[in-house]
Structures are given as C-alpha cells and as structure tokens.
Length: 170
Image (cartoon, rainbow, N blue to C red; front, side, top):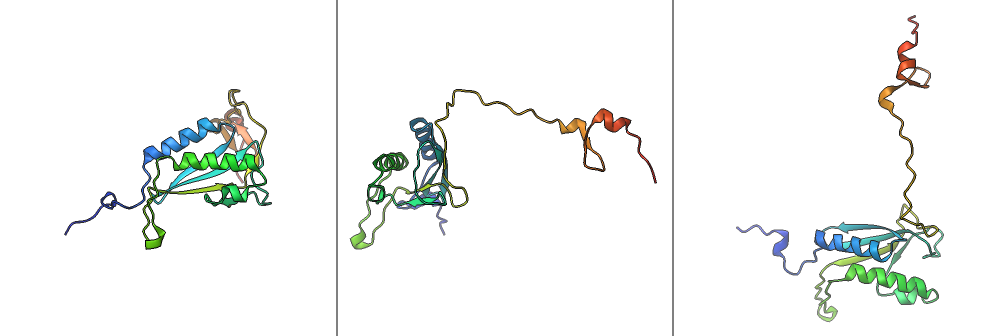
C-alpha cells in the first residue's frame, strides 16, 4: 500500500516558504510606512493583515475589516486611493498564483488562496504618522534583576542593600 504525502496531490493548493518570504520582502519594500502581519495558514493560503499605516483604510469603528478580493473596487469606490493600495497589496500576495477553476463543472484549481484584512479581530488597525525608519529607536535601559532582589514588602533592592540588611528572626 502506497502512503501518499502532501506533495503527491497535484491539484492541491500549496504555499511554499519561498513564496511567503517573497511576499514579506515585496510588501515591506513597496510599502515601508505600513506594518503587516504575514502568515501562512494550512500550507495553502497567504494571509495578510494590515496592522498600521499613515492613512485611514476602514470606516468600521472596531478598526477591523475582512477584504473580499473580488469587490475591492466596488467596496472602496468612494476612496480610490484606498482601493488602489489594497489592490496593489493583493496583487503582491497573488503574484505567481494561478486560477484554472471552472465553476460551471465544479472544478477548482488554485495555486494557493489569499486572505486580506485590515486590522485583526483582536487588534484594530492603527493610523500613525509617517515614521522615518532610518532614525534609530531609543533603547530603554535594562534593569539587571540578576543583581537585584525584592524584599518582603515588595521593594526592589540592590544586591549590596540586600546583603547588608539585617533580618529579624521572630
């Protein structure tokens, strides 16, 4: 009995790691002012969430919206710059894909599936100023807890203070 592996199915949708790396690279280089979450789901779909950017993308008060790739122009007809942006993002996601489906005979043949959303269900889209990414971020000072202790009252103490403290044994 031959055991079939995933790659043995010729007409199964599949997304390679190389494809995911290319999508990440292309989105980040084309739209550096936006922050994306790019994931592969079930080995067959490219999922992109637009987390933040310098323009308003949705009117939903919760900051989350799933995008129907076939209705981008229709849905955002009053905001052509948003429609254009979302179409470009989807085109990058869909690069190298094929759709040889024939719905009249119930035949589906996709290279892979794509899912695009503004924000995430638990993390709304955030509008921010255009950030200059060439400016280095200020580093927060690190607290070296290896040389610090917390006493019985919950106070943070240095090692020297802790070592020299007199303990009362009741």
